[in-house]
Image (tube, rainbow, N blue to C red; front, top):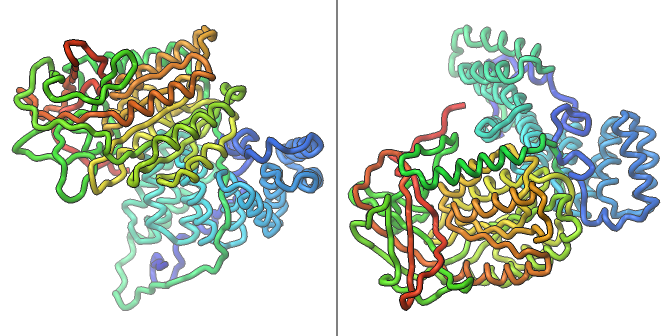
Length: 612
Protein backbone atom coordinates (compact mmCIF):
# COMPACT_ATOMS: atom_id res chain seq x y z
CA UNK A 1 0.00 0.00 0.00
CA UNK A 2 1.38 3.40 -0.94
CA UNK A 3 1.09 6.72 0.82
CA UNK A 4 2.51 10.14 0.18
CA UNK A 5 3.54 12.54 2.92
CA UNK A 6 2.22 16.06 3.14
CA UNK A 7 5.56 17.21 1.79
CA UNK A 8 9.08 15.91 1.36
CA UNK A 9 10.03 16.20 5.01
CA UNK A 10 6.92 15.53 7.09
CA UNK A 11 5.08 12.32 7.85
CA UNK A 12 1.41 12.15 6.93
CA UNK A 13 -1.09 13.46 9.41
CA UNK A 14 1.08 14.27 12.39
CA UNK A 15 -1.91 15.56 14.32
CA UNK A 16 -3.96 12.44 13.68
CA UNK A 17 -1.09 10.17 14.64
CA UNK A 18 -0.98 12.12 17.90
CA UNK A 19 -4.71 11.54 18.28
CA UNK A 20 -4.49 7.79 17.81
CA UNK A 21 -7.32 6.57 19.90
CA UNK A 22 -7.24 4.19 22.76
CA UNK A 23 -9.23 1.39 21.19
CA UNK A 24 -11.31 1.15 24.36
CA UNK A 25 -13.27 4.19 23.17
CA UNK A 26 -14.97 1.90 20.70
CA UNK A 27 -15.88 -0.67 23.30
CA UNK A 28 -18.09 -1.07 26.37
CA UNK A 29 -17.70 2.43 27.88
CA UNK A 30 -18.43 4.33 24.68
CA UNK A 31 -21.06 7.03 25.09
CA UNK A 32 -22.60 6.18 21.71
CA UNK A 33 -21.94 2.47 21.96
CA UNK A 34 -23.45 -0.03 19.60
CA UNK A 35 -26.24 -2.43 20.56
CA UNK A 36 -23.78 -5.23 19.85
CA UNK A 37 -21.78 -4.26 22.90
CA UNK A 38 -24.58 -5.00 25.34
CA UNK A 39 -24.92 -8.41 26.91
CA UNK A 40 -27.88 -9.22 24.67
CA UNK A 41 -25.98 -8.06 21.60
CA UNK A 42 -23.14 -10.48 22.30
CA UNK A 43 -25.17 -13.64 22.77
CA UNK A 44 -24.20 -16.87 21.04
CA UNK A 45 -26.28 -20.02 20.79
CA UNK A 46 -23.51 -21.74 22.76
CA UNK A 47 -23.99 -19.29 25.63
CA UNK A 48 -27.49 -20.62 26.21
CA UNK A 49 -25.95 -23.93 27.30
CA UNK A 50 -23.67 -22.40 29.96
CA UNK A 51 -24.19 -23.94 33.43
CA UNK A 52 -25.50 -21.74 36.22
CA UNK A 53 -22.17 -21.42 38.04
CA UNK A 54 -20.42 -20.22 34.88
CA UNK A 55 -23.22 -17.72 34.23
CA UNK A 56 -22.92 -16.29 37.75
CA UNK A 57 -19.16 -15.87 37.40
CA UNK A 58 -19.63 -14.22 34.01
CA UNK A 59 -22.21 -11.79 35.37
CA UNK A 60 -19.91 -10.76 38.25
CA UNK A 61 -17.04 -10.24 35.84
CA UNK A 62 -19.12 -8.28 33.37
CA UNK A 63 -20.40 -5.92 36.06
CA UNK A 64 -16.86 -5.34 37.33
CA UNK A 65 -15.82 -4.55 33.77
CA UNK A 66 -18.56 -1.93 33.56
CA UNK A 67 -17.33 -0.49 36.87
CA UNK A 68 -13.84 -0.15 35.38
CA UNK A 69 -12.25 -2.79 37.59
CA UNK A 70 -10.71 -5.04 34.90
CA UNK A 71 -8.26 -6.75 37.25
CA UNK A 72 -11.06 -8.14 39.43
CA UNK A 73 -13.13 -8.87 36.32
CA UNK A 74 -10.38 -11.10 34.94
CA UNK A 75 -10.60 -13.43 37.95
CA UNK A 76 -14.33 -14.09 37.58
CA UNK A 77 -14.28 -14.29 33.78
CA UNK A 78 -11.35 -16.71 33.82
CA UNK A 79 -13.34 -18.89 36.19
CA UNK A 80 -16.37 -18.72 33.90
CA UNK A 81 -14.37 -19.88 30.86
CA UNK A 82 -12.71 -22.60 32.91
CA UNK A 83 -16.08 -23.99 33.98
CA UNK A 84 -17.52 -23.72 30.47
CA UNK A 85 -14.81 -23.34 27.77
CA UNK A 86 -17.43 -22.69 25.04
CA UNK A 87 -18.73 -19.54 26.76
CA UNK A 88 -18.40 -17.07 23.87
CA UNK A 89 -19.63 -13.99 25.77
CA UNK A 90 -17.20 -14.73 28.62
CA UNK A 91 -14.25 -14.96 26.20
CA UNK A 92 -15.24 -11.61 24.70
CA UNK A 93 -15.59 -9.98 28.12
CA UNK A 94 -12.30 -11.48 29.31
CA UNK A 95 -10.56 -10.15 26.21
CA UNK A 96 -12.01 -6.70 26.90
CA UNK A 97 -10.66 -6.82 30.46
CA UNK A 98 -7.21 -7.73 29.14
CA UNK A 99 -7.38 -4.82 26.68
CA UNK A 100 -8.16 -2.43 29.53
CA UNK A 101 -5.10 -3.81 31.34
CA UNK A 102 -2.97 -3.28 28.17
CA UNK A 103 -2.37 -7.04 27.98
CA UNK A 104 -3.09 -6.99 24.29
CA UNK A 105 -1.72 -10.40 23.29
CA UNK A 106 -3.94 -12.11 25.87
CA UNK A 107 -6.87 -10.04 24.65
CA UNK A 108 -6.29 -11.06 21.06
CA UNK A 109 -6.16 -14.74 22.05
CA UNK A 110 -9.53 -14.52 23.85
CA UNK A 111 -11.23 -12.79 20.92
CA UNK A 112 -9.78 -15.30 18.47
CA UNK A 113 -11.16 -18.09 20.67
CA UNK A 114 -14.61 -16.46 20.66
CA UNK A 115 -14.51 -16.40 16.87
CA UNK A 116 -13.37 -20.01 16.65
CA UNK A 117 -16.36 -21.04 18.78
CA UNK A 118 -18.95 -18.99 16.85
CA UNK A 119 -18.11 -17.17 13.63
CA UNK A 120 -21.49 -15.42 13.30
CA UNK A 121 -20.98 -12.74 15.97
CA UNK A 122 -19.75 -9.35 14.73
CA UNK A 123 -18.76 -8.23 18.26
CA UNK A 124 -16.00 -10.83 18.31
CA UNK A 125 -14.48 -9.53 15.04
CA UNK A 126 -14.91 -5.97 16.30
CA UNK A 127 -13.08 -6.79 19.54
CA UNK A 128 -10.37 -8.64 17.64
CA UNK A 129 -9.91 -5.57 15.45
CA UNK A 130 -9.43 -3.41 18.57
CA UNK A 131 -6.79 -5.83 19.86
CA UNK A 132 -4.94 -5.91 16.53
CA UNK A 133 -4.90 -2.12 16.36
CA UNK A 134 -3.63 -1.91 19.92
CA UNK A 135 -0.81 -4.29 18.94
CA UNK A 136 0.04 -2.12 15.93
CA UNK A 137 -1.13 -4.79 13.48
CA UNK A 138 -3.00 -2.30 11.32
CA UNK A 139 -3.59 -4.55 8.33
CA UNK A 140 -5.06 -7.30 10.52
CA UNK A 141 -7.03 -4.70 12.48
CA UNK A 142 -8.62 -3.33 9.34
CA UNK A 143 -9.42 -6.84 8.11
CA UNK A 144 -11.15 -7.80 11.37
CA UNK A 145 -13.16 -4.57 11.42
CA UNK A 146 -14.17 -5.18 7.81
CA UNK A 147 -15.50 -8.63 8.75
CA UNK A 148 -17.46 -7.07 11.60
CA UNK A 149 -18.98 -4.50 9.25
CA UNK A 150 -20.02 -7.21 6.77
CA UNK A 151 -22.03 -8.99 9.46
CA UNK A 152 -23.36 -5.78 11.05
CA UNK A 153 -23.52 -3.44 8.03
CA UNK A 154 -25.61 -0.71 9.68
CA UNK A 155 -23.72 -0.42 12.97
CA UNK A 156 -22.20 3.06 13.28
CA UNK A 157 -19.71 2.17 16.01
CA UNK A 158 -18.32 -0.63 13.87
CA UNK A 159 -18.12 1.58 10.77
CA UNK A 160 -16.37 4.33 12.73
CA UNK A 161 -13.85 1.84 14.09
CA UNK A 162 -13.40 0.49 10.56
CA UNK A 163 -12.57 3.97 9.26
CA UNK A 164 -10.01 4.37 12.05
CA UNK A 165 -8.43 1.00 11.25
CA UNK A 166 -8.31 1.88 7.55
CA UNK A 167 -6.60 5.17 8.33
CA UNK A 168 -4.01 3.54 10.57
CA UNK A 169 -3.34 1.05 7.78
CA UNK A 170 -2.92 4.01 5.41
CA UNK A 171 -5.80 2.70 3.31
CA UNK A 172 -6.91 6.27 2.64
CA UNK A 173 -9.26 5.57 -0.25
CA UNK A 174 -11.13 3.04 1.90
CA UNK A 175 -11.51 5.63 4.69
CA UNK A 176 -13.26 7.96 2.28
CA UNK A 177 -15.58 5.18 1.04
CA UNK A 178 -16.50 4.17 4.59
CA UNK A 179 -17.19 7.80 5.51
CA UNK A 180 -19.47 8.15 2.49
CA UNK A 181 -21.27 4.97 3.55
CA UNK A 182 -21.90 6.42 7.02
CA UNK A 183 -22.77 9.89 5.76
CA UNK A 184 -25.42 8.55 3.38
CA UNK A 185 -27.36 7.26 6.39
CA UNK A 186 -28.72 8.76 9.54
CA UNK A 187 -25.54 8.86 11.60
CA UNK A 188 -26.02 10.81 14.79
CA UNK A 189 -23.06 10.17 17.10
CA UNK A 190 -20.72 9.09 14.29
CA UNK A 191 -19.18 12.45 13.34
CA UNK A 192 -15.71 11.07 14.07
CA UNK A 193 -15.65 9.40 10.64
CA UNK A 194 -15.35 12.87 9.12
CA UNK A 195 -12.24 13.49 11.23
CA UNK A 196 -10.67 10.33 9.81
CA UNK A 197 -11.78 11.26 6.28
CA UNK A 198 -10.18 14.71 6.68
CA UNK A 199 -6.96 13.02 7.77
CA UNK A 200 -7.13 10.66 4.78
CA UNK A 201 -7.68 13.50 2.31
CA UNK A 202 -4.86 15.52 3.86
CA UNK A 203 -2.50 12.55 3.62
CA UNK A 204 -3.22 12.56 -0.11
CA UNK A 205 -2.66 16.34 -0.25
CA UNK A 206 -6.30 16.94 -1.09
CA UNK A 207 -6.62 19.92 1.24
CA UNK A 208 -9.96 21.34 -0.01
CA UNK A 209 -11.79 18.06 0.68
CA UNK A 210 -9.95 17.70 3.99
CA UNK A 211 -11.21 21.15 4.97
CA UNK A 212 -14.78 20.23 3.99
CA UNK A 213 -14.62 17.08 6.09
CA UNK A 214 -13.48 19.08 9.12
CA UNK A 215 -16.27 21.60 8.58
CA UNK A 216 -18.77 18.73 8.58
CA UNK A 217 -17.14 17.28 11.70
CA UNK A 218 -17.50 20.59 13.59
CA UNK A 219 -21.08 20.99 12.41
CA UNK A 220 -22.16 17.49 13.46
CA UNK A 221 -20.30 17.28 16.79
CA UNK A 222 -18.95 20.65 18.02
CA UNK A 223 -18.30 19.21 21.50
CA UNK A 224 -16.34 16.15 20.40
CA UNK A 225 -13.31 15.18 22.53
CA UNK A 226 -11.30 15.44 19.30
CA UNK A 227 -12.29 19.07 18.64
CA UNK A 228 -8.93 20.43 19.77
CA UNK A 229 -7.05 18.03 17.51
CA UNK A 230 -9.39 18.91 14.64
CA UNK A 231 -8.58 22.60 15.05
CA UNK A 232 -4.88 21.73 15.09
CA UNK A 233 -5.33 19.67 11.92
CA UNK A 234 -7.13 22.58 10.29
CA UNK A 235 -4.20 24.87 11.09
CA UNK A 236 -1.75 22.33 9.63
CA UNK A 237 -3.87 22.05 6.50
CA UNK A 238 -3.94 25.82 6.07
CA UNK A 239 -0.18 25.98 6.49
CA UNK A 240 0.46 23.14 4.05
CA UNK A 241 -1.97 24.52 1.48
CA UNK A 242 -0.16 27.88 1.49
CA UNK A 243 3.29 26.39 0.81
CA UNK A 244 4.70 26.51 -2.73
CA UNK A 245 4.33 23.23 -4.56
CA UNK A 246 7.64 21.28 -4.43
CA UNK A 247 9.45 20.13 -7.52
CA UNK A 248 8.35 16.70 -8.66
CA UNK A 249 11.82 15.29 -8.03
CA UNK A 250 11.61 16.34 -4.36
CA UNK A 251 8.46 14.34 -3.62
CA UNK A 252 8.91 11.16 -1.66
CA UNK A 253 6.52 8.28 -1.89
CA UNK A 254 6.91 5.45 0.59
CA UNK A 255 5.56 1.94 0.36
CA UNK A 256 4.92 0.15 3.62
CA UNK A 257 3.74 -3.32 4.48
CA UNK A 258 2.75 -4.03 8.04
CA UNK A 259 3.22 -7.70 8.93
CA UNK A 260 0.37 -9.13 10.93
CA UNK A 261 -1.51 -12.36 11.31
CA UNK A 262 -4.90 -12.41 9.70
CA UNK A 263 -7.83 -12.80 12.11
CA UNK A 264 -9.26 -16.26 12.27
CA UNK A 265 -12.84 -15.67 13.32
CA UNK A 266 -15.97 -13.51 13.37
CA UNK A 267 -16.67 -10.32 15.33
CA UNK A 268 -19.72 -9.41 17.36
CA UNK A 269 -21.14 -5.93 16.90
CA UNK A 270 -22.16 -3.45 19.63
CA UNK A 271 -25.83 -2.88 20.26
CA UNK A 272 -27.46 0.58 20.15
CA UNK A 273 -30.70 1.02 22.06
CA UNK A 274 -33.15 3.51 20.56
CA UNK A 275 -36.28 5.05 22.01
CA UNK A 276 -39.42 3.03 21.46
CA UNK A 277 -41.46 4.10 18.45
CA UNK A 278 -44.95 5.21 19.42
CA UNK A 279 -47.74 3.18 17.87
CA UNK A 280 -49.38 6.34 16.62
CA UNK A 281 -46.18 7.36 14.80
CA UNK A 282 -45.90 3.99 13.06
CA UNK A 283 -49.56 4.10 12.10
CA UNK A 284 -49.02 7.56 10.60
CA UNK A 285 -46.02 6.38 8.55
CA UNK A 286 -47.94 3.40 7.20
CA UNK A 287 -50.94 5.57 6.39
CA UNK A 288 -48.68 7.97 4.47
CA UNK A 289 -47.22 5.10 2.44
CA UNK A 290 -50.70 3.73 1.70
CA UNK A 291 -51.95 7.18 0.70
CA UNK A 292 -48.93 7.72 -1.52
CA UNK A 293 -49.61 4.44 -3.32
CA UNK A 294 -53.09 5.62 -4.31
CA UNK A 295 -52.07 9.18 -5.20
CA UNK A 296 -51.45 9.77 -8.87
CA UNK A 297 -49.90 13.22 -8.32
CA UNK A 298 -47.58 12.52 -5.38
CA UNK A 299 -43.94 13.49 -5.73
CA UNK A 300 -41.35 10.74 -5.31
CA UNK A 301 -39.71 10.38 -1.91
CA UNK A 302 -36.30 11.96 -1.47
CA UNK A 303 -33.41 9.53 -1.11
CA UNK A 304 -29.70 10.28 -0.77
CA UNK A 305 -28.82 7.00 -2.42
CA UNK A 306 -28.81 6.75 -6.17
CA UNK A 307 -32.06 5.08 -7.25
CA UNK A 308 -31.68 1.73 -8.90
CA UNK A 309 -32.46 1.43 -12.57
CA UNK A 310 -35.48 -0.60 -11.62
CA UNK A 311 -36.97 2.32 -9.67
CA UNK A 312 -37.86 4.14 -12.86
CA UNK A 313 -40.75 2.89 -14.91
CA UNK A 314 -39.28 1.72 -18.15
CA UNK A 315 -37.91 -1.77 -18.11
CA UNK A 316 -36.35 -3.27 -21.19
CA UNK A 317 -34.03 -6.17 -20.52
CA UNK A 318 -30.43 -5.61 -21.43
CA UNK A 319 -28.88 -8.05 -23.87
CA UNK A 320 -25.61 -8.04 -21.94
CA UNK A 321 -25.65 -7.05 -18.27
CA UNK A 322 -28.94 -7.26 -16.40
CA UNK A 323 -29.17 -5.04 -13.31
CA UNK A 324 -32.87 -4.55 -12.74
CA UNK A 325 -33.90 -2.75 -15.89
CA UNK A 326 -32.31 -0.53 -18.54
CA UNK A 327 -34.17 2.15 -20.43
CA UNK A 328 -34.52 3.35 -24.01
CA UNK A 329 -35.63 6.87 -24.78
CA UNK A 330 -37.53 5.69 -27.84
CA UNK A 331 -39.85 3.24 -26.12
CA UNK A 332 -40.83 3.53 -22.46
CA UNK A 333 -42.04 0.26 -21.01
CA UNK A 334 -43.15 -0.96 -17.61
CA UNK A 335 -42.74 -4.54 -16.33
CA UNK A 336 -44.77 -5.86 -13.40
CA UNK A 337 -44.46 -9.14 -11.55
CA UNK A 338 -47.70 -10.47 -10.06
CA UNK A 339 -49.26 -13.57 -8.58
CA UNK A 340 -52.90 -14.64 -8.64
CA UNK A 341 -54.75 -16.83 -6.15
CA UNK A 342 -58.18 -18.42 -6.03
CA UNK A 343 -59.39 -18.86 -2.45
CA UNK A 344 -55.78 -18.85 -1.26
CA UNK A 345 -54.47 -21.29 -3.86
CA UNK A 346 -52.01 -20.14 -6.52
CA UNK A 347 -53.27 -20.07 -10.11
CA UNK A 348 -50.56 -21.28 -12.47
CA UNK A 349 -52.31 -21.49 -15.88
CA UNK A 350 -53.13 -17.86 -16.73
CA UNK A 351 -52.82 -16.52 -20.26
CA UNK A 352 -52.68 -12.92 -21.43
CA UNK A 353 -56.42 -12.90 -22.25
CA UNK A 354 -57.11 -13.58 -18.52
CA UNK A 355 -55.24 -10.44 -17.38
CA UNK A 356 -56.23 -6.77 -17.32
CA UNK A 357 -53.85 -3.82 -16.93
CA UNK A 358 -54.51 -0.18 -16.01
CA UNK A 359 -51.81 2.48 -15.68
CA UNK A 360 -52.99 5.78 -14.17
CA UNK A 361 -56.53 4.47 -14.71
CA UNK A 362 -55.92 4.06 -18.45
CA UNK A 363 -55.36 0.91 -20.53
CA UNK A 364 -51.82 0.66 -21.96
CA UNK A 365 -50.97 1.57 -25.50
CA UNK A 366 -49.76 -1.99 -25.99
CA UNK A 367 -48.92 -5.08 -23.97
CA UNK A 368 -45.43 -6.04 -25.09
CA UNK A 369 -44.89 -9.24 -23.18
CA UNK A 370 -46.46 -11.85 -20.89
CA UNK A 371 -44.83 -14.92 -19.42
CA UNK A 372 -44.89 -17.31 -16.49
CA UNK A 373 -41.84 -16.71 -14.31
CA UNK A 374 -41.92 -19.96 -12.34
CA UNK A 375 -38.52 -21.02 -13.66
CA UNK A 376 -36.87 -17.63 -13.18
CA UNK A 377 -33.71 -17.78 -10.97
CA UNK A 378 -34.61 -16.73 -7.44
CA UNK A 379 -32.89 -14.02 -5.40
CA UNK A 380 -34.33 -14.41 -1.93
CA UNK A 381 -33.70 -12.29 1.12
CA UNK A 382 -34.87 -14.04 4.29
CA UNK A 383 -35.36 -11.67 7.24
CA UNK A 384 -36.27 -13.14 10.61
CA UNK A 385 -37.16 -11.37 13.86
CA UNK A 386 -34.86 -12.40 16.73
CA UNK A 387 -36.13 -9.98 19.37
CA UNK A 388 -37.12 -10.88 22.92
CA UNK A 389 -40.80 -10.75 21.98
CA UNK A 390 -40.60 -14.04 20.06
CA UNK A 391 -38.41 -15.99 22.51
CA UNK A 392 -41.03 -18.56 23.54
CA UNK A 393 -41.80 -19.62 19.97
CA UNK A 394 -38.43 -19.00 18.32
CA UNK A 395 -37.27 -22.62 18.11
CA UNK A 396 -40.43 -23.60 16.26
CA UNK A 397 -40.01 -20.61 13.91
CA UNK A 398 -36.41 -21.63 13.22
CA UNK A 399 -37.44 -25.14 12.26
CA UNK A 400 -40.24 -23.90 10.01
CA UNK A 401 -37.91 -21.37 8.37
CA UNK A 402 -35.22 -23.98 7.66
CA UNK A 403 -37.80 -26.32 6.15
CA UNK A 404 -39.17 -23.50 3.97
CA UNK A 405 -35.75 -22.43 2.67
CA UNK A 406 -34.82 -26.01 1.79
CA UNK A 407 -37.95 -26.29 -0.37
CA UNK A 408 -37.68 -22.87 -2.04
CA UNK A 409 -33.97 -22.45 -2.79
CA UNK A 410 -33.72 -25.47 -5.08
CA UNK A 411 -32.85 -24.20 -8.56
CA UNK A 412 -29.26 -24.42 -9.82
CA UNK A 413 -29.10 -20.61 -10.11
CA UNK A 414 -31.10 -19.73 -6.96
CA UNK A 415 -29.36 -17.61 -4.30
CA UNK A 416 -30.50 -16.54 -0.84
CA UNK A 417 -29.16 -14.57 2.12
CA UNK A 418 -30.24 -14.56 5.78
CA UNK A 419 -30.69 -11.50 8.01
CA UNK A 420 -31.53 -11.62 11.69
CA UNK A 421 -32.65 -8.51 13.50
CA UNK A 422 -33.16 -7.45 17.11
CA UNK A 423 -31.69 -4.08 18.14
CA UNK A 424 -29.16 -4.57 15.37
CA UNK A 425 -29.34 -5.90 11.82
CA UNK A 426 -27.01 -8.85 11.26
CA UNK A 427 -26.17 -10.42 7.90
CA UNK A 428 -25.73 -13.98 9.13
CA UNK A 429 -25.30 -15.49 5.66
CA UNK A 430 -24.56 -13.66 2.42
CA UNK A 431 -25.87 -14.74 -0.99
CA UNK A 432 -25.41 -18.48 -1.46
CA UNK A 433 -27.16 -21.41 -3.08
CA UNK A 434 -25.80 -23.86 -0.51
CA UNK A 435 -28.76 -25.11 1.53
CA UNK A 436 -26.50 -26.30 4.35
CA UNK A 437 -25.02 -22.83 4.81
CA UNK A 438 -28.45 -21.22 4.71
CA UNK A 439 -29.90 -23.66 7.23
CA UNK A 440 -26.88 -23.33 9.52
CA UNK A 441 -27.24 -19.54 9.49
CA UNK A 442 -30.87 -19.70 10.61
CA UNK A 443 -30.01 -22.21 13.31
CA UNK A 444 -27.29 -19.91 14.71
CA UNK A 445 -29.77 -17.12 15.49
CA UNK A 446 -30.57 -16.39 19.14
CA UNK A 447 -33.51 -14.22 20.33
CA UNK A 448 -32.53 -11.15 22.39
CA UNK A 449 -33.07 -7.41 22.51
CA UNK A 450 -35.43 -5.00 20.76
CA UNK A 451 -36.76 -4.88 17.22
CA UNK A 452 -35.25 -2.96 14.27
CA UNK A 453 -37.71 -4.21 11.65
CA UNK A 454 -37.61 -1.23 9.29
CA UNK A 455 -33.80 -1.05 9.32
CA UNK A 456 -33.72 -4.74 8.40
CA UNK A 457 -36.24 -4.39 5.56
CA UNK A 458 -34.44 -1.34 4.16
CA UNK A 459 -31.06 -3.07 4.23
CA UNK A 460 -32.34 -6.32 2.70
CA UNK A 461 -34.30 -4.53 -0.06
CA UNK A 462 -31.24 -2.48 -1.00
CA UNK A 463 -29.10 -5.60 -1.04
CA UNK A 464 -31.48 -7.39 -3.40
CA UNK A 465 -31.89 -4.38 -5.70
CA UNK A 466 -28.18 -3.52 -5.96
CA UNK A 467 -26.86 -6.95 -6.93
CA UNK A 468 -25.82 -6.99 -10.62
CA UNK A 469 -27.29 -9.87 -12.60
CA UNK A 470 -26.35 -11.45 -15.91
CA UNK A 471 -29.97 -12.50 -16.52
CA UNK A 472 -33.51 -11.65 -15.36
CA UNK A 473 -34.18 -12.82 -11.79
CA UNK A 474 -37.04 -12.80 -9.30
CA UNK A 475 -36.24 -10.53 -6.33
CA UNK A 476 -38.17 -11.71 -3.28
CA UNK A 477 -37.97 -10.62 0.35
CA UNK A 478 -39.57 -12.80 3.04
CA UNK A 479 -40.03 -11.22 6.47
CA UNK A 480 -41.01 -13.25 9.56
CA UNK A 481 -41.93 -10.92 12.43
CA UNK A 482 -44.70 -9.68 14.68
CA UNK A 483 -44.41 -6.27 12.95
CA UNK A 484 -43.47 -4.35 16.07
CA UNK A 485 -40.54 -1.91 15.80
CA UNK A 486 -38.79 -0.08 18.62
CA UNK A 487 -35.16 0.24 17.50
CA UNK A 488 -34.96 1.40 13.85
CA UNK A 489 -33.47 4.53 12.37
CA UNK A 490 -35.49 4.00 9.19
CA UNK A 491 -39.25 4.56 9.19
CA UNK A 492 -41.94 2.26 7.85
CA UNK A 493 -42.51 4.59 4.91
CA UNK A 494 -38.80 4.69 4.05
CA UNK A 495 -38.55 0.89 4.14
CA UNK A 496 -41.57 0.52 1.86
CA UNK A 497 -40.18 3.12 -0.55
CA UNK A 498 -36.82 1.31 -0.74
CA UNK A 499 -38.56 -1.95 -1.61
CA UNK A 500 -40.77 -0.25 -4.21
CA UNK A 501 -37.87 1.52 -5.89
CA UNK A 502 -35.79 -1.65 -5.94
CA UNK A 503 -38.61 -3.68 -7.53
CA UNK A 504 -38.50 -6.04 -4.53
CA UNK A 505 -41.69 -7.92 -3.69
CA UNK A 506 -42.02 -8.38 0.07
CA UNK A 507 -43.92 -11.33 1.54
CA UNK A 508 -44.61 -11.04 5.26
CA UNK A 509 -45.45 -13.80 7.74
CA UNK A 510 -46.92 -12.54 11.00
CA UNK A 511 -46.00 -14.35 14.21
CA UNK A 512 -48.84 -12.75 16.20
CA UNK A 513 -51.18 -15.15 17.93
CA UNK A 514 -54.91 -14.61 17.27
CA UNK A 515 -55.44 -14.37 21.03
CA UNK A 516 -53.07 -11.38 21.21
CA UNK A 517 -55.30 -8.30 20.87
CA UNK A 518 -52.93 -5.74 22.38
CA UNK A 519 -52.85 -2.44 20.50
CA UNK A 520 -49.17 -2.71 19.58
CA UNK A 521 -49.74 -6.19 18.14
CA UNK A 522 -52.57 -4.96 15.92
CA UNK A 523 -50.41 -2.07 14.74
CA UNK A 524 -47.61 -4.52 13.93
CA UNK A 525 -49.88 -6.74 11.87
CA UNK A 526 -51.19 -3.71 9.98
CA UNK A 527 -47.59 -2.70 9.27
CA UNK A 528 -46.74 -6.11 7.85
CA UNK A 529 -49.86 -6.16 5.69
CA UNK A 530 -49.09 -2.69 4.29
CA UNK A 531 -45.46 -3.61 3.62
CA UNK A 532 -46.49 -6.67 1.61
CA UNK A 533 -49.41 -5.18 -0.30
CA UNK A 534 -47.61 -1.95 -1.25
CA UNK A 535 -44.62 -3.80 -2.69
CA UNK A 536 -46.49 -6.38 -4.75
CA UNK A 537 -46.05 -9.23 -2.29
CA UNK A 538 -48.61 -10.86 0.00
CA UNK A 539 -49.20 -10.94 3.76
CA UNK A 540 -49.62 -14.22 5.62
CA UNK A 541 -51.10 -14.32 9.13
CA UNK A 542 -51.07 -17.91 10.42
CA UNK A 543 -52.72 -16.91 13.69
CA UNK A 544 -50.68 -19.37 15.72
CA UNK A 545 -47.14 -20.64 15.76
CA UNK A 546 -48.34 -24.15 14.89
CA UNK A 547 -49.95 -22.86 11.67
CA UNK A 548 -46.69 -21.27 10.57
CA UNK A 549 -45.54 -24.24 8.50
CA UNK A 550 -48.80 -24.19 6.56
CA UNK A 551 -48.43 -20.49 5.75
CA UNK A 552 -44.84 -20.94 4.66
CA UNK A 553 -45.96 -23.83 2.46
CA UNK A 554 -48.54 -21.57 0.80
CA UNK A 555 -45.91 -18.85 0.42
CA UNK A 556 -43.64 -21.34 -1.32
CA UNK A 557 -46.33 -21.95 -3.95
CA UNK A 558 -46.91 -18.22 -4.45
CA UNK A 559 -43.23 -17.45 -4.94
CA UNK A 560 -42.91 -20.16 -7.59
CA UNK A 561 -46.03 -19.12 -9.52
CA UNK A 562 -45.37 -15.55 -10.57
CA UNK A 563 -46.10 -13.88 -13.90
CA UNK A 564 -44.45 -10.97 -15.67
CA UNK A 565 -46.46 -8.57 -17.83
CA UNK A 566 -44.80 -5.67 -19.67
CA UNK A 567 -46.53 -2.81 -21.47
CA UNK A 568 -46.24 0.71 -22.87
CA UNK A 569 -48.28 3.15 -20.74
CA UNK A 570 -50.58 5.69 -22.36
CA UNK A 571 -49.86 9.42 -22.04
CA UNK A 572 -46.55 8.65 -20.39
CA UNK A 573 -44.26 11.47 -19.27
CA UNK A 574 -40.98 11.28 -17.36
CA UNK A 575 -42.09 13.93 -14.89
CA UNK A 576 -41.18 12.27 -11.61
CA UNK A 577 -44.81 11.73 -10.71
CA UNK A 578 -46.28 8.60 -9.16
CA UNK A 579 -48.36 6.45 -11.53
CA UNK A 580 -50.78 3.87 -10.09
CA UNK A 581 -50.91 0.32 -11.46
CA UNK A 582 -53.96 -1.95 -11.30
CA UNK A 583 -53.57 -5.57 -12.43
CA UNK A 584 -56.71 -7.75 -12.55
CA UNK A 585 -57.19 -11.39 -13.49
CA UNK A 586 -60.11 -13.71 -14.21
CA UNK A 587 -60.24 -17.40 -15.01
CA UNK A 588 -63.34 -19.02 -16.47
CA UNK A 589 -65.36 -15.96 -15.51
CA UNK A 590 -64.16 -16.11 -11.90
CA UNK A 591 -62.33 -13.07 -10.49
CA UNK A 592 -58.97 -13.86 -8.90
CA UNK A 593 -57.06 -12.13 -6.14
CA UNK A 594 -53.95 -10.47 -7.58
CA UNK A 595 -50.79 -9.48 -5.70
CA UNK A 596 -48.74 -6.85 -7.55
CA UNK A 597 -47.00 -3.58 -6.83
CA UNK A 598 -49.33 -0.61 -6.69
CA UNK A 599 -47.39 1.81 -8.87
CA UNK A 600 -44.06 3.47 -9.73
CA UNK A 601 -42.40 6.85 -10.09
CA UNK A 602 -41.84 8.13 -13.62
CA UNK A 603 -38.28 9.21 -12.87
CA UNK A 604 -36.94 11.84 -15.26
CA UNK A 605 -33.34 10.76 -14.74
CA UNK A 606 -30.98 9.33 -12.20
CA UNK A 607 -28.46 11.53 -10.43
CA UNK A 608 -25.45 10.70 -8.30
CA UNK A 609 -25.54 11.06 -4.54
CA UNK A 610 -24.78 14.45 -3.09
CA UNK A 611 -21.11 14.92 -2.42
CA UNK A 612 -20.53 14.51 1.29
